[in-house]
Amino acid sequence: MFADLHLHTNFSDGTYSPEELVAQAARHKLSGISLTDHDTVEGCERAARACAAVNIEFITGTELTAEQNGNEIHLLGYGFDPLNPKLLAEISKFQAVRQQRIHEMVARLNELNIPLQVEAVFSLANCQSPGRPHVARALAQAGFVANLDEAFERFLKKNRPAWVPKARMSALEGMELIHQAGGVAVMAHPGLNRTDDVIPGLVRAGMDGIECFHTKHTPSMARNYLALAAKYRLLVTGGSDCHGMSKGKPLIGTMRLPYDHVEKLKAKLAERKTTLSNANQ
Ligand code: AMP
Ligand code: ZN
Ligand code: FE
Ligand code: FE
Image 1 (spheres, rainbow, N blue to C red):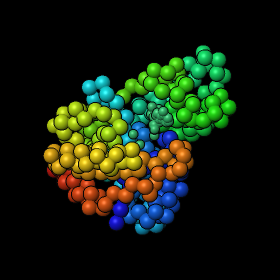
Image 2 (cartoon, protein in one colour; image 1 turned 45 degrees about the vertical axis):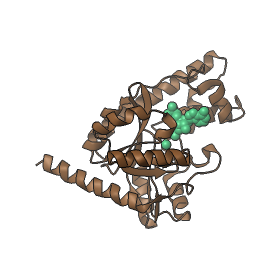
Image 3 (cartoon, rainbow, N blue to C red; image 1 turned 180 degrees about the vertical axis):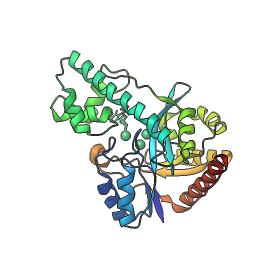
Image 4 (cartoon, protein in one colour; image 1 turned 60 degrees about the horizontal axis):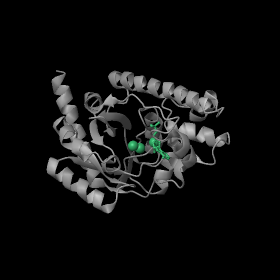
C-alpha cells in the first residue's frame, strides 16, 4: 500500500479539481492521499468526500508558507480539524496578503508596459489563495509571454521586475497553529530550500516530521533526510507535489510513500488528540 501526501488542486495553483485529483489517485492505485494546497484548506472537504466514494484514505492537509531565520520554508500540516476557527482565521489573513500581492505584481507589470488586467488573473485563479503561477498563466494566456517559464524568468522570479515579496507567518507560529488544531507539522521538501541549519531549531520547537521523499529530491537527499529523521525521531513523509497539468505532465503516481509511514503519522495524530483533550479538561 502506498500514499501521496503532497498534492495541489485548483484551490491553489494546481489544475485539477479535488474530484479529478482523487480520480487520478485511484487510477494510480494509491491507498491514501492528503491535499496540501498553499495557505488554504478549502479543497479538503470535497477531496475527502471523493476519497470516501472510492475507498481511499484521506488525511486533511495544507502547505503553509512560513519563514525561519529569514528563509522561506513550506510547512505541511496534516490531520488537523479543517474547521478549527483559529486556523481558518489565521490562514484567511495570508490569503488576503496573497490577493493584495496579485494587485501589486500586476501594477508592476503595467509599469513595464505589459497591460495585463488584474481581473484576468483573479478570474483565472478563481480561488482564495492565488499566487505567481496564476499571474504567469494569465500572462501566457494573453500572449505576453510564450510560456510559464518565460513569465518567471522575465518577471516573476525573485528579484525580477514584477516580483513582490510576500509577508509570511513565522514557522513557530505555523507549527503552533497546526498543533492547536490537532494536526502534525512537517517541513516540506527541505532539499529544495537548502536551509538544513534551521532544522534543529524547528525540532526543538516541536516539529513532528520531515518530507524525505519528494519528486525533486535526489536519492542522496532522501537518504540524508531519512538519517536526520532517525536522529531527531521525526515522522517521515513524502509526496509528488503534483500541480496537475500546470507543470508539464502530472506528477501524481511518481512518488509512492510506503504505508507504514502513514500509520506512524496516524499514531502521532492520535497521541496529539489525547494530549489536546486532556489539556482541555
Ligand atoms: P508564490 O506562492 O506565489 O510565491 O508562488 C510559488 C509557486 O510558484 C510554487 O508552487 C512554485 O512551484 C512556482 N514557481 C516558483 N518559481 C517558479 C519558476 N521559476 N517556474 C515555474 N514555477 C515556479
Ligand atoms: Zn504550488
Ligand atoms: Fe512547496
Ligand atoms: Fe507543494
